[in-house]
Every structure is written in structure tokens, then in C-alpha cells.
Length: 498
Image 1 (spheres, rainbow, N blue to C red):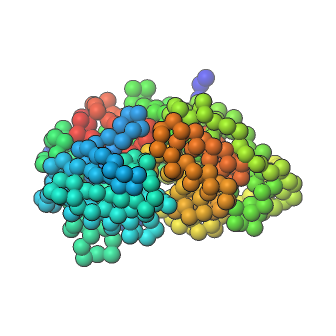
Image 2 (cartoon, rainbow, N blue to C red):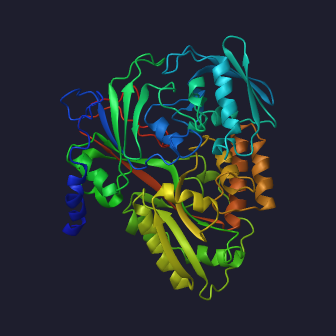
């Protein structure tokens, strides 16, 4: 099918917007090829939202750029793998012993049991708590010259997975000194050292030559934070960047086929209904909103085939989930909205979301709601969303991003004490189902319990899964070794080069 030429025009008009933006800045980093052709030029969709704190949304930004690491990582199958910890053992149901590998921080100090224990302790004291620690109380103490003993208040079979979270990155003692915020600049352990941050616009990273995992092939990374997806695609197409994340579906056609890489992810786009708002505290009106949604208009119209219809909280990349899914439990019957007024909010860092929200607005209005749409950049929206200032919210959430554990995301997003509970859901049956799942160690049985809890959550209609997204990453023709991670935790590693 021939596409209208008008879809190409915005990209062409925005092409000058990034012209020269990767030229040398006088700090030794250059991405125009004149000073150092091995530096990578990267365009990211999300600027720092919390002063690069590792405890919130910026944690993933740091891990994707190869700056920070935790005690563990996730392997291709979603299991816990060694990182700063070379191995671990479970001493009893509440205590684990992690044995550290030899490594150094980017400020030259050694990674020791004391510094690791201190870093984990700082994470437990953060306000608000990192999502990976939602509902979890833990203590960390040095154990001899190479060990860190982590004890949880309650049994936590998923602790090695939990410690892989980007929000539990290990930083040196200097990161916590003399400031009210944690400073990762020059204090992390990854293959790339963050050396300069230019507000919400750009950042410079240099290779950390003493990285325990080996010397990175790229000498550094020059990053631009470009919220406009059309501009990111244009920058890749005109060879201003080597990697561009989150290419909009509408712009994929403007790139040569070899430049666009679609990856099935564990990211689900959902409609979250505020269970404490004047309208959606009524379960019948939540059911009416759910019944109004036609996901085919999203998969075919908005995502043009780069998505699957929402089947639950876990997408196709979570291969075990499909065979274990059960029908939602205890759903209410829909009631007539009768012109009920709601505010539907979303953010534009992921460029399809405003279009998704516009389609939902039309569907909800057809069902009898009166809808006001509000779109902002994510960093200007998150605090209001967490505070419950919107009746409904459209967001894209990677269900295994925070911990890799399918149960942990349920605890953080849908329980009474959850730290990222945008629906403000507080349901005793949901809490009970999640708590039961949290206590199970056997992998298959834990998955079964997670799906039972999912059924309880979906039964409240506090969340309506819309689509499971395939993320499109723009990869330049000279680039090899880009990390197209279904968990979206990594992008650049020691083998990424041009």
C-alpha cells in the first residue's frame, strides 16, 4: 500500500533541528568523526527526570548507557545472572550470601563488601522507595573480605532477581556525600563513565578502561535527549546519530529496512483507571470504560502491526504467561456513564501514546463519557499521576523492568502499599493474591500464582491492557553489537561499536 507523502513531511521539516548537535563540545568528546570515530552518538527519548537519581525513572537511563550495575543482571531467559556478584547462595529462607568479584568504581576506589552494603542501605532509605523494593524490607551487611549478606524481613525467593533492578545499582561512597541527592557521575562501575550532564539536553560519557568485564570497543558515548520521535528518526536517517531509541511507528517507513530493528518486549500499554477519582471509584463505570475499548483500532491503526492486542499484564515476550492465563475474577457489570466527565492523561515521549489516548477518547465518548485529554512530557506528568490528579492514564510499562520477577511488578503497581500504583488500587483480595505469590520459591508455581493475582487485578477493571508493544530501535549501518533487550535495561555494552 502506498502511504501518503504527507507522513514524510514532518521528518523533513525537523531534520535541521539536530544539525550539528553531535559536534565536538570542547570537552574531548566528539561525534562528528573528526576527533574520534569510535565514539557512539545516541539519541534517547527520555531526558533525566529526577537529577539522575538511581531510585526512579532515571535508573534505566543509566543502565541502558552502560553506566551502572547491580549485584546481579538478567540473562536472555530472564533468570538472575552474575554482575558485581560472581555467585550467591541462600543460607536460609530470609538470608542470602553474595560473593563479590574484583572490581573498581569509576572514581578509583575498590568495590568492597562495605561499599556494596552501604549502597543497598541507601536504597532502602530512599523516599519514595525504589519500585524494586516495594513491600520488601531488607538489610545488607559486609561478610568478610568478599561477601555481602542480605537479609529480608520476610522470605523473598526472588531476591537475586530483585537485586538486578537498575534502581538498586551499586555506587561508591562518594556518590552519597555532601548532597541531598545521589550523584552517579563518576561513581558507578559500568564500562562507561558519565562525565558531563548538560541539563535535560545532553550528556557525555567516556570509556572506563578499568572495567572488570573488559575494555569497551567504543571510546565513549555522546548522548542527546530528544523527546520528539520524528526528530530522532530524522537524525538517524541523516547520519547524525548511530542509535536512536523508540522510533515512532509512523516514522519506521522513513528508514531503510536495515536501520530499524523491532524487538518484542515485556512492555504493555495500558489504560489505568483511578479507583479513588469521583468517577472511577465506581466499579460499574470502570467496567463501562473497559467495555468501550476496541484494541483492534490500536494494533492496526496506531501501531500498524508493531503490536499485539493486550491479553493481560504480561506480553508475548513473557513466553510462559500465555498458557497459564486465567479469566479475570469478579468483574462488575458496566453501568451507563451518562455524561460523566473524566480527564485522560498521557505523555508524548513515546510518540504513539498521544494517538492511543486520542483513539480512547473517541471510544469513551461514544460510550457516554465526556473526556478531556491532557498530554505532557513524562517528567512533568509523573508526580501528578502518582498523586491521583487524573481520572485515567495511558502508560507503557515494562512488566519485568524493575526486578525481572513477575510478582514484584504486581506489588509495586497494584497493591495498597505499591510505590507505582497509578490506579490507586487498594483491594484486599488483590493484596492477598500478590502476597501469596511473593512467598512461593518454585519458579513454575510462582508463575501460576502470579497469573492468579493478575486475574484478580484485571477483575477490578483498574487496569485495561491495550497492546503489547514491539519497540523499534534505529541502528545505524556502521553499528554492531547494539543490545536490543526485551527487558529494555540495556542498549550499549562493551561490544557496541561503529
